[in-house]
Length: 285
Picture 1 (spheres, rainbow, N blue to C red):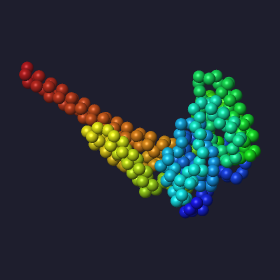
Picture 2: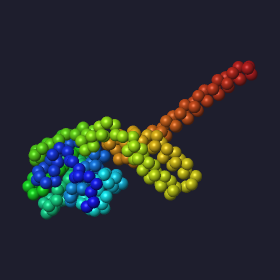
Picture 3: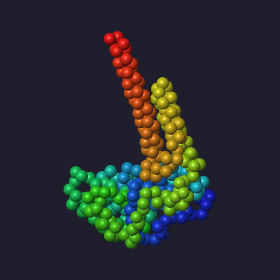
Picture 4: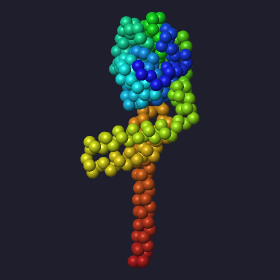
């Protein structure tokens, strides 16, 4: 592998060599930090991801993160083995089958699929416990890292102690702190150049979408791209949203402001017309 930098550091004693189980509880989804973490793990060697939620790293963002450490991005990317179950039973099966593998295991959004309100909560708790039984065996032969998002609901309060109980260590991360641990400069607001670069990439994606719609609507798409550039810093700081989600939020905000302004102008115009009409009525009398 043609490396540009030494092996990138990993936080919280997270090691692909030590066979232990680490639970990381996060406030928010920590998407940007997780993308950076996954890129660093891939640089170090093969590992397996079970994604309990819908989110997995954006491929463009992952490519950019990997380029910081290596020019051989394709080889590095092949170190990542990813599975995405659709139900908690599939999740349980994947965990159970993981004892046949030898590479480190990374589980994202561990409890997400167990929040199925159509299934009795006691049954779901038993399934969480079964998962944990399998993980206790797996951690004897390979390192396991679990990311579990903190949510204010009864299910989480019931399930998360079961998971924490099998860990050698548990870490609580505030919003954005995973990225800050990996990239200390992120704690200083992140640099403007990176923010502009991200916004440029998003604008390019939005403009590409514009090539597939009616030409009469492309001016609107172009305006959306300009709004993304205007809000580049806010989008870059939104570590709990995927970049495109943050960009669309800013677009909706701008559209709301525009509509509110037009509505206020229309109300003012109607008020003025009412006044003039009253004046004309008085004159006519």
